[in-house]
Image (tube, each protein chain N blue to C red):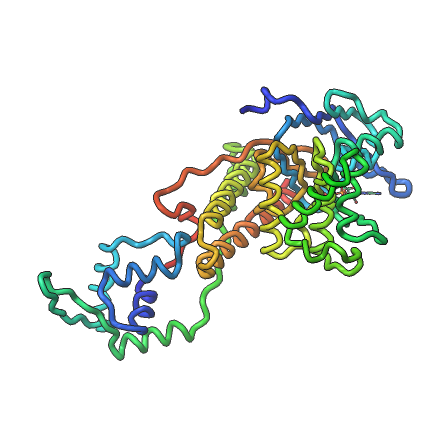
Length: 168
Length: 250
Ligand SMILES: Nc1ncnc2c1ncn2[C@@H]1O[C@H](COP(=O)(O)OP(=O)(O)O)[C@@H](O)[C@H]1O
Ligand SMILES: [Mg+2]
């Protein structure tokens, strides 16, 4: 979350709650919304590392609020993040380990493992369908995020099929 | 409702198909026992060559089984001759082929109305049904075009509209979203969901998990055999947003 907060602050200074709202507005329900506590902890760490700084802003009738802004060091860090290629996703090796090793020990039947995993993926796909149905069509960011998750899940299922064809 | 309480629409007993490729027999479907209740939505999945098309072709009478039985609405049908199958298809079965099979010298509208008319609908009914289906699939503007002027994805959607035109007791669809982009897939899935809610029985072949996951039940084939057959659990929502294990940003 560190870098998403830096990115939001590069747009404009903001306080913690505004950052939470901006994340929710941008990514919609597809994004597991961070709680405000997490955001303040992260902001605290960013401040300690010199990437953001906070100023107290007085408010009438209310306690002061802390508005955060990006430092030059923070901007450097953000630019470095944007400039570098991002690691691709890794295969779900935990299931693959089970699939290869469990039958060797006689603990489990490979066919049963694959069938159970397929059903699990399909039920995840179903929840993504529901998520897509319940997400505002106008929120393209959220829809692309869900579509990305669906494509990854499809790849996992295709790979499962390959395992089923190739492993004895 | 559990499938047990539903009346059975289609049932197979030890169904098998062996193709002859030169001197080599190719078992395409082996020992399939299926029972599908009225109103069920069943997805058939499996790798390429696992026998999905062969299975649904047999269910629709388009391919003769080598062994076993097929029962449709309580009647044994695998023994029927071709003319009787043709009649049965006209009345009871809608079929979406993997490669569309639209009538080339008829407009889209006529392609879709034809099965309803053949099944005995009045011209007015057939027309209303056609308008509803083409609208649901975003094809109203293409009504007067001949199939040859349509893209693959459009032809595929017309094929679906045509299959639903006579309100069949069984819809068989072979990869009906295979040529569609994600928006058209959404229209097709929405229509399938709609007719399913109205009680349409659906057997749909797909390798797309997104499509399969909408079914009540998924049958998985491998090497012509059913290796899994079960309902898909409706996942419990974890707090707001759900699906949080899949959609995760860091
Ligand atoms: N008309 C045919 N003649 C010979 N072999 C066929 C014929 N149709 C299908 N097959 C073979 O039967 C098997 C199952 O094919 P198919 O039912 O088309 O699988 P799927 O639809 O799952 O890809 C494959 O090995 C395929 O090569
Ligand atoms: Mg096929």
